Length: 218
Image 1 (tube, helix red, strand yellow):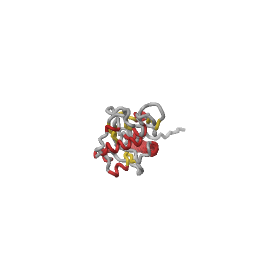
Image 2 (cartoon, helix red, strand yellow; image 1 turned 60 degrees about the vertical axis):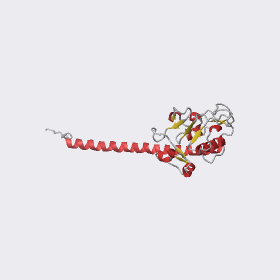
Image 3 (spheres, one colour; image 1 turned 90 degrees about the vertical axis):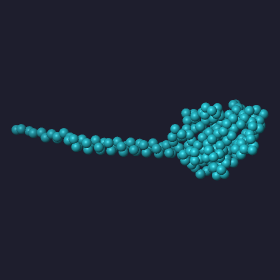
Image 4 (cartoon, helix red, strand yellow; image 1 turned 60 degrees about the horizontal axis):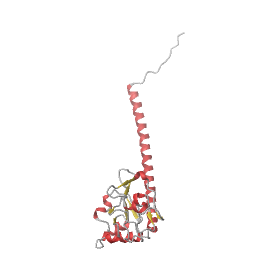
């Protein structure tokens, strides 16, 4: 007695193409899901970090002379006498700095550079001190002098995201958590509302992400 075996014919070309198409769709869906998950994680990380920076700015404002706001633009001079008091930004800068550092009396040079800080640098300086990590001397006429009783740092900037400015020794910007090709810019809402920022230092110069509290983060 003969037995016959039935063997399923091989996949046709059309069937193979259908299988490949289905696999491609599945891979695309998985990739899309992973991308969305990574984007969501970045969004959460960014919002968390922004909230932490905002809290740190509030703490720094209280600890540094109870200033009404942390500036997003500041003119730095070695001594108070070097400011041009007919210039509104010089006047604002000297007033804030002398409130923050009452022992800065001009008897010695401050260790910070003679320069201006913009919205990508000012908050790093005031929260972290020189190089974004050193804080400030609480007693010496030179607020950047190392050692002694310290004020700050008020925020733990990750060193691998701090970028020094080669033209401003000791001054850094902070890479954006969301996009490491850009720097996080922080604006004082009071300075924005009152129009006390120089025209080239307004928030329109930076892509926007913001909160509604004392300082605005972009």
